[in-house]
Image (cartoon, rainbow, N blue to C red; front, side, top):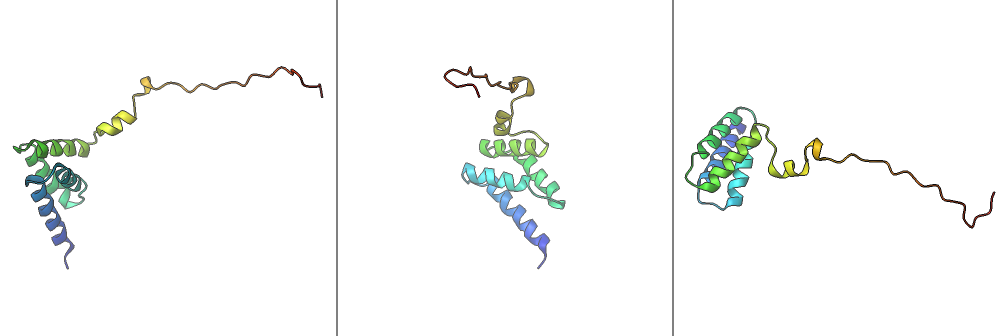
Length: 108
């Protein structure tokens, strides 16, 4: 069995889901699958995502735009919100322990 056939079949299935009348979650999953392809399939998947940027369905278009952005190394919205810029982060200060007065204690 030739592994490249499976890769090409996977590309075909993901393309059909992305451009077909499927729910938004399925389209996002297909865009993720295309984004994660490796080797010679990466270029073909990138072409499919670029075609999706011009698609009439806004869900398909949004999923493709986001996937292309992430392929180019952009941060996702969730990752960007969890990692604020260094200037917005507060410095960690050390809290010094106060030495208790020996109230009520007998000297040793």
